Image 1 (cartoon, helix red, strand yellow):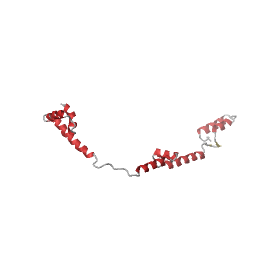
Image 2 (cartoon, rainbow, N blue to C red):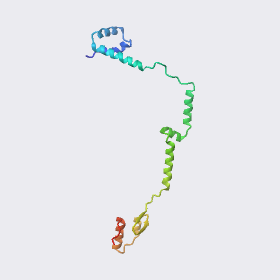
Image 3 (cartoon, rainbow, N blue to C red):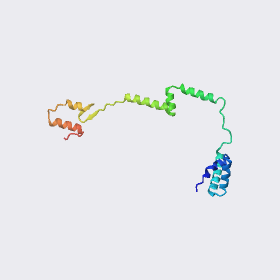
Image 4 (cartoon, rainbow, N blue to C red):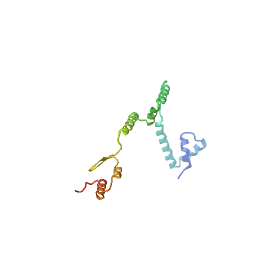
Length: 158
């Protein structure tokens, strides 16, 4: 059975319950085992919670603490854009990553991206389609066989 008196138990233990309600709750507790269990459990919970409360006052910062914090903030503001990026990333790898990016950019300028193709019996050319367009196909079967061999990449039959 749910008792409306259970809502009063916390106030009863903290001694903030009105005297009339306090008397009514004490009379009710004498006859209700459910509320008695709730009262016991609440008392135990309050004891455990009292262990969590610190006994000593929290430590106070030293006299120059706030000055050092302000100086640290000022150093961060004067650090420049790269320091801001490094602080935003919260990584000690900012400088090595920047060096790696610069190396990649330098490497991209030195790499030859043009592909060259080697063909059996033909000189190496950069653009095979342009080479085929310049060929004269006056010999019929022989030119057609050369085109097919080049496209397929098989050696001619002897």
